[in-house]
Length: 203
Image (cartoon, rainbow, N blue to C red; front, side):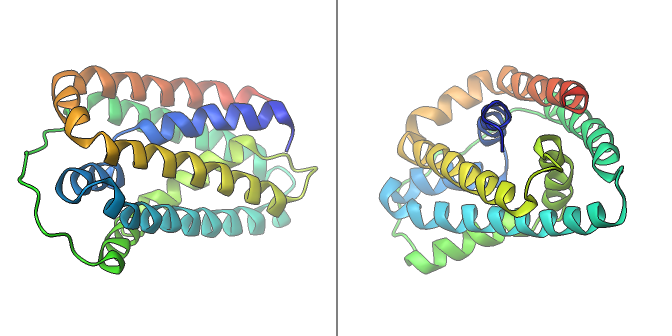
């Protein structure tokens, strides 16, 4: 993967990691309830689930590229349209409302890991999202699986760090999200709209 493509992917992944979603909300909740150290189990489970879904999406992309030389261009345009649609949904989404709770006795580490994993893989739309997102950064002249390895490691590191910071700052972040949630959603939705419009045009 070329350096400029990786840097663009990194910026997109940071935006993706900051976008409100089920795993971010779960991490925020567990951080507030059980503390950031115990919530690391939740984070590892969630990141593992996302990487698994990335692998499944990349496998489907690889099969498609073997059948058609123009498949990547088609994927880029279809994926761009999907990212724009997703941006509109995020823009229109209501702000998060989190209920404060007293700290309780945490479940076991493996139980939290399982919750994070199931939260990541239980939404089939995630596979569709990766199917739209990943082709925007692929170079058909390079090894598909080496590019996947770079993408997966970058995503795992970025998502893991973001969720850890959420867990660590759970009590401080929650009031801010409730006050500025609508503007935050519009910022993230606008980012996805721009990505969807711009990335299919890049070469």
